[in-house]
Length: 124
Image 1 (tube, rainbow, N blue to C red):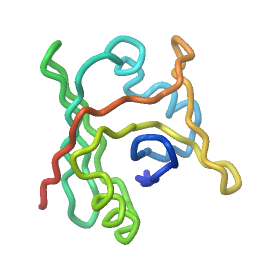
Image 2: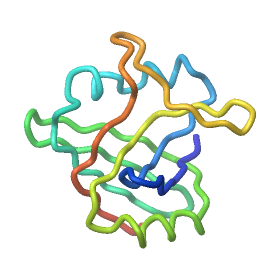
Image 3: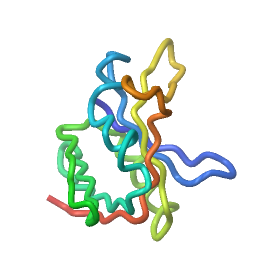
């Protein structure tokens, strides 16, 4: 899976995991959106040859991981520079012919967007 970084005008900085299957994108960790959307998420970003993301919520206590995500280093560095100390949005997306689309959860048909209160960069 690939991790993409965007800086949309008038919106918080954005990161998204690109899935090959819309069905998989709609199912994986959909509980975060369906049941825990209001949680104050912290995101740990661990870098190396690939990126590992770890979402953490203190109340209720939960965590989820995404591993071995490929990424564009130049876009990541640019995104980090702009996004430091800001809330960000995270999504599951699919790419169809060069167009990227945010998916909806399978169970409740909610747009798969999580607001992340803060993130921390961990170097491997």
